[in-house]
Image (tube, rainbow, N blue to C red):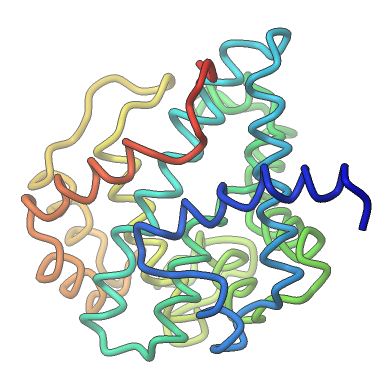
Length: 261
């Protein structure tokens, strides 16, 4: 291995590793639980390194940086942080909980390549072509993770990413799956993803829901959109104060900031 490769690996080894540190997960855990190979772990590290390198390039558009760091990455971190306690409360195995956590971190990975216009446009104002791209989002995300890891990753993680916009009542995408046909991890991510979107700012919406408002919205859409059992677990395992403390973790780290924004 040449010196340039050594330098590259010394730079990238801390990015995905640091993202996982707040979950008490590390590469050895993944290998032990057969979640991904060490090579796949390093490939994901290298992916985040490439994203970070783009973001600190002075020519990289400021709006792109905002979406990449403040919106996409932080959202993924919060989704992962909120999902883990739900999985633990649901008595998932250590391997299953780790898979759900990693899927949460990677579920929007394809959005790093979306045009800002698509990210900034309210859903109801999207063109037919733009709406189609949105509907292909989960399949594209799973394919992206599969490509990055060279397929050396647990199928369960890919299934969660692919299914995280399926609705419990069978009206979601991409497969209109319903009930138990949807991966349990995807059912959890579906709830947590919606909660974080409701309670976080987005350029295309005004106002932010409170914790109570978001919980009530989840409850109103039980059975049609969300698994009622997991909504109950979410509410029980994540009271507002715990959400606040996890949100601080999710928002305080990620890419090494330097002059990123």
